Image (cartoon, rainbow, N blue to C red; front, side, top):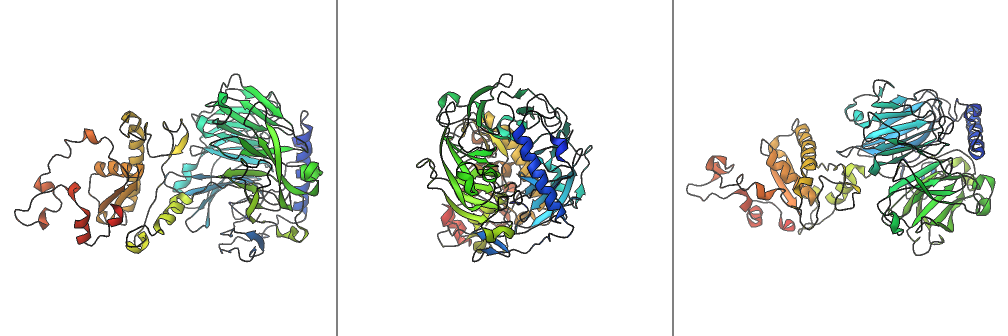
Length: 609
C-alpha cells in the first residue's frame, strides 16, 4: 500500500478459501480463491512484514513524472501511513471510504484484515490516526464500509460478522488513538445476515444494501435490504434476488431520459456476468427491469453512472477480463466498458476505454465527468470521460492524471496481478478549505486585494452545511443550511425553514462558543454568502451578546416580516455607539450605515456594494 486515503491496499488473510466456498456462484468462488492465493504469496514473500512500509509526513510533489519513487502525473504524495501505524496487528488492508463532518472536518474509514481504522485528514493534507474498531468476529481479506448521515456501516466476509453500525461523530472528540469496543461503542450490530462481500449505501432512501450474502442467507447473494432510518434499530424490508449474486451496485433516485422511472429508486447492479437494473421503489416487490451481458465479460465487478443529472451512460469494470485475456482485454490493459442506459429496459454496450498500462481494474467513482479509478498495481488513474455523450465509443476518453502505488512493475509497463490499490474515495472537498482557499486567494476587491492581504492575521472558518432533502431540487439530498420551497421567493412556505434554521444556528453558535475560549468576542466577525447570509443573519439576531462585526452578500433576512416590532426605533441605552456621539447627534439604527461612512473609517468595502 502506498496511498493511505487515495488508495487502499489488498492484503493476505487468515481466512482460507475453504471457508468461503459457495455452491451457487462458481465465478465468485474462483475469483476469491485466486485472490486468497495471491495474498498468501505476498505474505510469504514478506510483503506485510513488520516495518516494511514506513509512514511519512513528507510531501513529495509530482515532478518530472515522479513523486519520490512513485510514477505520477499531476498527483502529489501528501502523506503516507502504514497499516501497522494504524493499529492493525495483521498490517494488511482492503477497502476505504470517507466522511465529512458538519463543521467540515474530513475523516477516513480504512478497511483492514482485522478491523477498521479511522483517520482524520487535517488542513495541510497530513493524516492523523484516531483509532480503530476491531472486526466483529474473525479476520478476513474482505471488509467494506459506507456512510449514511454520519453513521459508518461495516460488513465483511468474516463468518457471522453482520453489519457494524458506528457513529463517526465519536471521532470528533477523540484526543488520543482509541480502540473502540465492538459492543459498547457500536450504535447497533445488525445480525440479519452473517457475511457479506460489499456494502452499498443509498443515503437519499436511508437504505443500506448488503451484497454477496449468499453463504449466510437465503437472498442468493442479491440486494439484502437494510432500512437505516433509525440507525440504532436497523430493519430488513426484504431482498432483491431475481438475478442472483450481486457483486456491487449503485442505487439512485432516478432522473434520466427513461422518464417512466423518474422519481423511482433504481439500482444498477454488477452481477458477475451482466449489468442488471432493478426498480427498488416497492421494497416488498422489487422489479427487475433488465439484465444485459456483454462480449468479453469474465467477472462483472463494479461501475458508476457518468452524469447523475442525466443518467444516460455508465461505466463498468470487469475484474477478470485482463487476467483471463478475454475480448479486447486480452492485451492486459485495464479495460473500462461503456453502456448507454437511456432505456433502462434495453441498455446498449457502446464502446470501451483502455488504460495505457497493464493492470486489473477494481473500483471507480465519477465526479463532473472525471472517473477516479483504483486499478490494483497501476494505482489511482484519473480519466476524463466527459465526452461520452458526444462520442459513446470512448475514443474521446483521456487519462489526465495518475499515481502509481506499485513501482515494482513499472519497467514492464504494468502487471496483471492482485496487488496495489483496491479503492479510491474522491469526495473530500477539504472541509470547506478548498472553497475557503479559492475565496481567500481570489482578488475580487475593487482594489485588487485578497481577504488574506486585506485582513492579515485573521483566522477564517468555513463550516459546512449538513445534507438535507431539497424541496426545490426534487427532494435530492444536498448540503444546505435549511430547506427552502422557492428560490424566487425565499419567504414562501417558511415552515419548511424552521427546523434547519434552528439546527444550523445551534451548530454555528457552538463554533462561536469554541472560538470564544481564545478570542475576544469583539474580534469575531460573522458573515455569509447567499443562504449562508440568511443563516448568519438569523444567528446574529439570536445571540445573547454582540460580536465584532457582520457582513452578508446576496442574501435575505429570514422571517423579516415577523420581527418589525423587534427592530422598532432603538433607545439610546441600546445604542452601542452612544458614548462616542456628540450631544444632539441624531440616533440612527445600525442598518442605516453606508459604505462611504465605512470607507471614511478605513474599511475597504466598495467591492461589497
